[in-house]
Image 1 (cartoon, rainbow, N blue to C red):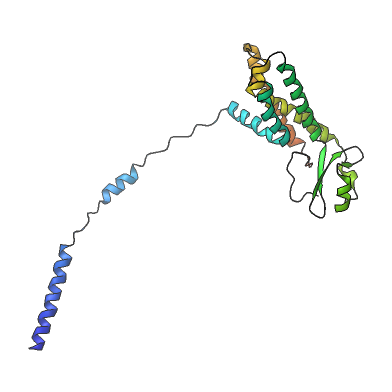
Image 2: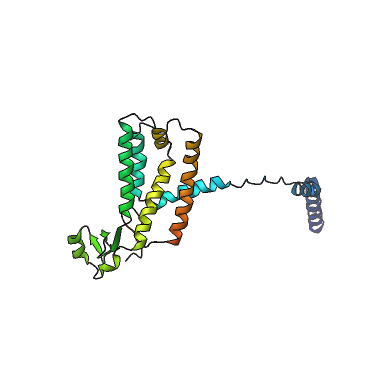
Length: 230
């Protein structure tokens, strides 16, 4: 009797599992649809290439990184105030011209500044002369340790080239500013407008080439100092 009951129970379990498996619905497989979707992937439209004028304007904007940071910051903050957002009068126009001259002079003189890193890690700035580097805070620098060969920091031909190029780059940046243009040329004619559009681009391209031909190793005031600065 026990053997017959066990056989019946096992047979009932097998039939129940078979009926449960038959009741599970099977998901349809649409391989053809997936292949069709993969074959019909929408193509991305080609990205338009920038024109020559746009590339030139971008290179001119990147040249602003070659100017001292303090000069650019003063230019961006003071020009809208001096020009009254481009609406100059008889009093603000000469004041704006004087401000631009001072900022251009700061770009010129900053190219003759240099720095060195003392043994204690402190960075000291100075002005390069024909005899060497004239340190601004010489007393504090002497405590940290002044390098013995300051004559290697003396002025060279490349310093004058970079000074002139920095002034030209500043002029190009100023001519691209709408407040400066509206101040000195509120209603320019066709020829003047064409000159204002072409001259900054020409200055930017020429100066970018000359900066590559005449590189400098100075890191003066307003310029970044490399970690391995001497």
